[in-house]
Amino acid sequence: MTGRAFIADTVALVTFFTATGIVNERFVVGMDWDEVAASRMIGAPLMVLTARPYGLWRDAVLARCSDGTALSDAVWDSVALLSFQVPIYVAIIATGGARGAELAIGAAGAALIMLALGRPYGLWLGQVRHWFGLPRDGGMTPMSSGA
Image (cartoon, rainbow, N blue to C red; front, side):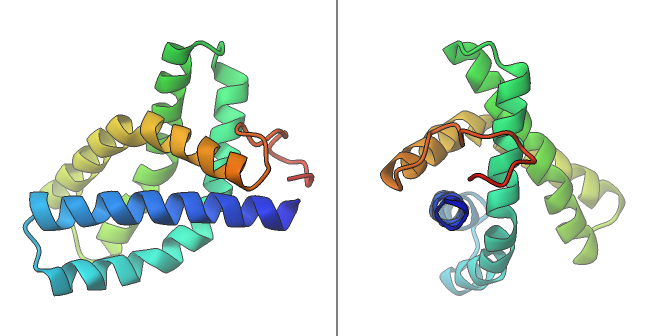
């Protein structure tokens, strides 16, 4: 089941954030299609590396913090995505040369995006897991090896 969970979480993250990244980079940022393609090619390996750890993180946050209501799940999905992905994004743009105000603006923008996309991504992740025959919530504790 571990391999299936890795693949499901990876498929979910890559498909969701490739689609949203393309829309953002092309239609919000105004990047040319070749720049969008280059950006997505750079991002893909990072998504593969972080998809399953994020899935485990998200499951742990929801299991510990959510009371199971739709509103609570929405809030904690957003908090989970924000707390996991924004530090990674800040490290990426800092490595790319962002400093000072650029870093702050980049972090703030990423935070807003992650807050907005947290619940839609959580629902997508659950759906992809379901298609792979897995529980939508990961069905495990964060340090177990069962999924």
